Image (cartoon, rainbow, N blue to C red; front, side):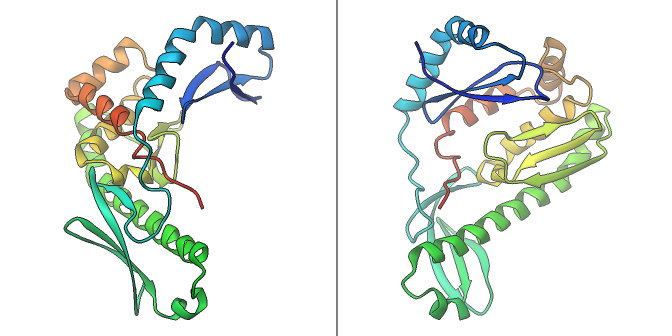
Length: 237
């Protein structure tokens, strides 16, 4: 019998299965019995075994720390992290390097405390990723919305680690700041995907037909996200 982590929710209406880092996560409504959940897991065992094998076969993420020479995926390309000190904190890109500049006044405060320094680097990188993602979506969302014929009420960008975007019944869209780690054409796909949910709040055949009509390359985008999922993880400290 496959082992899994069970997360129950009062608001949830369906049972969802996810494989993350080789572990099975089940999200279920409060009213679904343990036996029913076990039967669902059993019925999906082949799929679950395949997903676990795929993830275990992938190389481990190289970015385990926010330290000099760590590897980060930015705009779909691996960048080497370099850490400097300067007058002002900032993140800059230079060829194959992403440079995190910390305020000089922190140098004495941090000293040899690597964990504290990593915390500041992490905060700067997260703010920068959010800014980059927001700027691109802000520039392109209305173009795709007009093409599809929908009108989103608003959008926001947050650090979501388990989803790229979402759409609610109030026509409000949300996007993960980690999209800045992917190529621009992947962000375009996620934009189209969420906008199409304004027409179809599901993943029905009609939904995917609308996605295909407005983003024919969507299969390639899904495949890219799947093949790079290990590199798109955001480590914690």
